[in-house]
Image 1 (cartoon, rainbow, N blue to C red):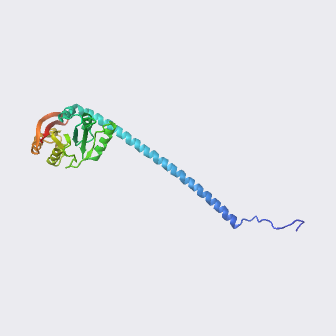
Image 2: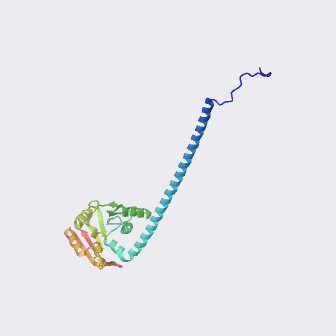
Image 3: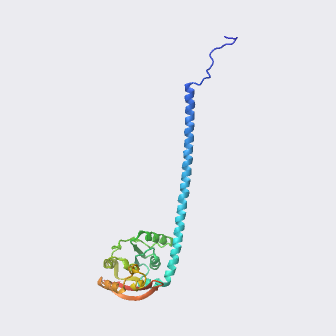
Length: 261
């Protein structure tokens, strides 16, 4: 006792190592929790920004696609005025349920017209060696609800057509691109049913007059095509060297042939 008071054992007010360690661990856990919260926030922000970027890209692509299709429709309306598509289709001798090939279909100018002619029970086989125009054609057929269009990715010397299962073949603005036309005609003959029609439409070499040597590569003489057709066993029904004229691009000819049994 000192000064009338018990001194006894008084709790120490100095921090112990255990208390310091506990305090440090408490601060460390708090920092970890804060770090986790910051990371979660950053991840959420990143996901949001990524989602916005993807959405903008999709909207931009959709806008470009819509604009492209609108421009394409406008170009095709102009083409309708000089190409005479109705007469060409008539020469294919199609009916409801027919199977018709559009060789060198591109984005489907004729494919979609043919689809409506052969109806739901028929089938159109557009063939092209390029993937992009076939993708565009798939989209167009889907948007126009043409379910009888089966696109085929062909090769330069092999259109991959079914044997003896085709009623008619259209080769428009494509014959001049063929590296080995006789080989292609032989395959078309095997794919066509007996008496099936083959219609070929292309530019006359006179169309390239004054347009340079490159334009000559996009034209072919009708007499040359007729000779090859006869050699490959086709019967030529009609040939018109002045079938139509494209404004600014000269004459187009047409040949109608029949596959002999």
